[in-house]
Structure formats: C-alpha cells, structure tokens
Image 1 (tube, rainbow, N blue to C red):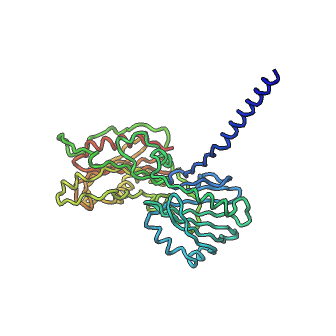
Image 2: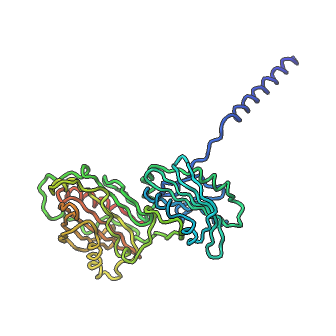
Image 3: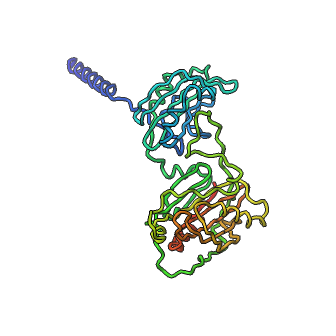
Length: 395
C-alpha cells in the first residue's frame, strides 16, 4: 500500500516537472510593433509611452518624453545623409555626440545621438534615419536630460523594433478625417490628408464610356439632397510643433493657409495620361476623381456664396478652357450649398472633361467636393459622384 502511494506521488511529481520544463522551453512572444494612426512606420515603444493623439508618434506626457515619426519620400534619404552634419544640427540647438550606421530588418540607415537645448529645457536626443523601400523613415526621440526612465539602452531597444507596413488599412485612413463617407460608390481611396481631405479615384477601366444618347446638359436633381442632422464643423486639430530636425512628412497634416481656408486646391493627377496623339485615346486613359475637403471659414452672408463658389472653382488645378454650364444654390444634406458645373479640357492631354463642385456650408466651416471625369463617361460618373456626396456626414 505504501509503495503504491509512493509510486503515485513520484509519478505526479514527474508530470509536474515535465510540464514546468515545457513552459520554460516555450519562447516568450515578442511584442508587436504599434503604428500611430495613418502611419506606415511603427515600433514597440518603451514601457510608459503610448500612441500620441496629438502627433504621429508616442509620448509620455508626465515625463515630457516623446518619439516623433515622419514618413518622407525615398529620395529624402540621400539628402539627409549629406545635410545632417554637425554644423547643421548645431543650428537647431543639437550637439552631435555620435553618428553610427544602423541595419534593421526594415532597412538600413544611420543613428545620430546627442543633446538638444530648446528654450530652458535640455534633452537627450536620438535621431534615426532609415531607408526602407519607397519611403525614408525619420524617427526623433527626445527625453529630458534629468530623466532616468528612458536610458540609452531602452531607447535603442525600441528603435531596433522599427517596422514598416506596406500600406495603411483603408478604414484606418478614413478614420483620420473630420467627416465620414458612407458610400464610396465604387471609387477607391487614392490619398488621405489627415484631418483635412480625401481623394477618391476610378481608373479608366472602371469608368465605362456612355453609349446611350444623353443630353449635353447634366441631369437635374432635386434641390434637396439627403438631410443631415449636424452642420459640418472644422474638427481638425493642429498637432504640437515637432523639433526642427523632424521635418514634416508629405503624408502628414499641413498648416492651413489663408488661401487654403477659402477652398482647398484640387489634388494633382496620380497617373500620367497615356502618351497618344489622339485626344480620344487620352480621354480613355483619364481617371475620374473626387476631392472631398473640410475647411474652416466660408462666406459670412448667404448672398456671398455665389462669388465664393466662383473663386473656389477658379482654383481647381489641372484643367483649362473652362466653360461654366451651371451655377446655382443647392441644398445638400439638409444644409445650404452651392453647385457649379462646367465643361473643360485636361491641361496636359487636351481631353474633354466635365467638372462639378459642390460646396456645403455649415457652422464655422464648409465642405468642398470637386469631381472631374471624362466627358464621354459623365452621365454614369455623375450619378456615382452624387452617391458619394450624399453619404458624406461631418463627425
């Protein structure tokens, strides 16, 4: 009986030892890189830092420590490699202590370490420049000189986890806008300016030529589009200024100038028109596009909306030989708006185009929606543009 009990105890102990050895032999799973909203660049931040809601990067507000991330074009790497020298950094209040090459899974580049004086504050500074495929990653780390929570080895460990994703998920991009789009109507997301604007596009193959005989004049629509309960407001927030060495990314938010507050300019073509001598071939290669932008301001008086719409329309780029065919007030989403429609030609190819601009006025701001498409596909494209327009709602 005693022997049987002993064998039972030893068998149980042996099983426990086996399970413990399996647990110890299992490698711990490394933390996954975190990506600031809208950024292709991410990393595993040091403990204590979280994704900032004010700029692209990570922050520890209590300790005044931050990691700022900028996405630059691939060509920027060679420029930074030449210009980020001791003298240039000194102009920005940075004393360079060391420069060393860096090779990570995401790419190769160099790391600068030193100290920076900004006003009465003194910081320890790390600046990583990395070439990664079609972009250059610029990561700036600043920690108060007196702080001990983020020593050199901790910062370097975080920088070593830098990762670059191929693209930002579409829904994540749309989430950065001050408005929602309920129906893309077959358009694809071409570009997002966080807090400001969205560019949608449709390739020529996605914009079939109209074969039915249509009137040259655009189909009429009811003056009242779908109602909206809330007026569009300018909800974009200006992020805190980054250190001078972290230059703005082309994908990042840009400061709103006075001219931009009147009407955001039309985004440039994302593809070159086919090099064909015939205008018909050029027209077939032209993309349909839609720019939706939120801007502060707008006309103070209702009587000024017509002239405001004309000024805004005149700032649309990429077109010439414009002939206005329609200019009238239009209720959009239950709010005051203005519709302008015109015939035009593509500034490069000379292809026949149709252009529409819708302005939707709200409290403290307005929405500008500008659609451009080939004239021979206008009827079908216009219905899709209207579907997107009517689905836009301010947040």
